[in-house]
Each structure stands twice: as structure tokens, then as C-alpha cells.
Length: 109
Image 1 (cartoon, helix red, strand yellow):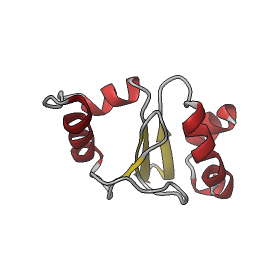
Image 2: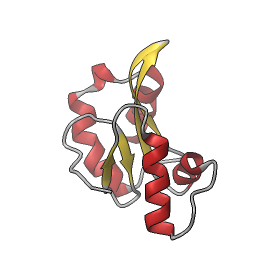
Image 3: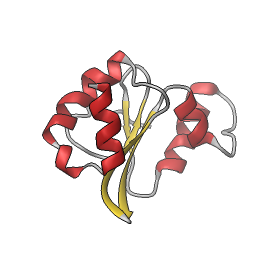
């Protein structure tokens, strides 16, 4: 698993402390399994993506049906570290987010 800076809008997983793990299109579950295996030292549960989100992770998708654009999936609120990293990318790319994500992130910032 490799971390990358989140300095442009791209898909992946962001940890509660702001570390970003990129994914290719449709690879979120495979990367979630790797994250779980590496960080929690146990086999990933069948709902690994939902569990990571419940633990404060932010899942960033690119939607290609119904609405086209990026979706930030998080539960509750972003952590201060996530807000610090996501905000500049969000401000430069508001036009590329689906409506529900745009609304959620506007409330965060």
C-alpha cells in the first residue's frame, strides 16, 4: 500500500489522520481489504468499506451513473486533519462534485 499526497481530486481512501491511499476506478474494496489487513492485522470483514468509514476514514469515489462527479463518503464529520487536506482541493474542484457531496463538504468548511 502506498500513500500519496492529496493535492488534486482523485479517488481513494483518506485516513482520519489525513494519509491518502489512492485507488483506481472500482478498486476501493480491494484497497480497503489491504488497509484493514495492514493496520488491524486481521482478515478484512465482508463490510470492510463501511467499517472504515465508521472508524473515521473518508472514501473518495468518482461516480459515473445518474450523477457524474466525485463523491466524498464519510460518517459524521471530517477530522481536523482531513479538513485541512481536503479543503484546498475541494475549493478548486467544487464543479466536479455531485450535489450531495458538495452540500456535505460545504457544511464541513
